[in-house]
Image: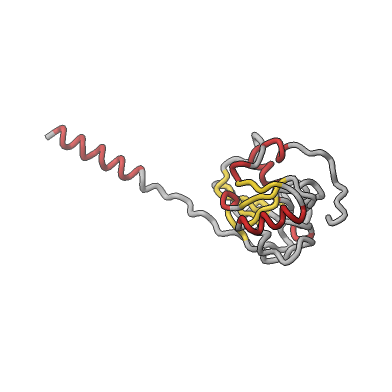
Length: 173
């Protein structure tokens, strides 16, 4: 009897531990003029190219970035990201133009995007960008037009995100 009672307690404890309230994944926020970049404190919507927003488990609201590369830097650097829940990036296959894409961007999960790296296009602060696309064909077309390589989220080189050649002279920026 004692063995049965002990087994029941163990099963109940195991089942209860799986019932903890997990915080639901937040939906992406709409980009407004109140959104300021985490690193630059500038108005995100005023910058060219793709944007990003990060949600952390113990923080209310999105953390905004004027470029996708900045969000990936935040996610990689020790001491920056504390408990990332999800990263959303602009789907540039849905953007109407590079110069200040439309206000209500189409947001996709960072890990679902295809990225063009090493292109001639520059991001929100004039640095090299990691340009996200919701589909491979759009990423391939962008790479053909502006140079660069198409990679998945997991294949973005750490050196590309954390390094910088200082090339800020793209006339199309």
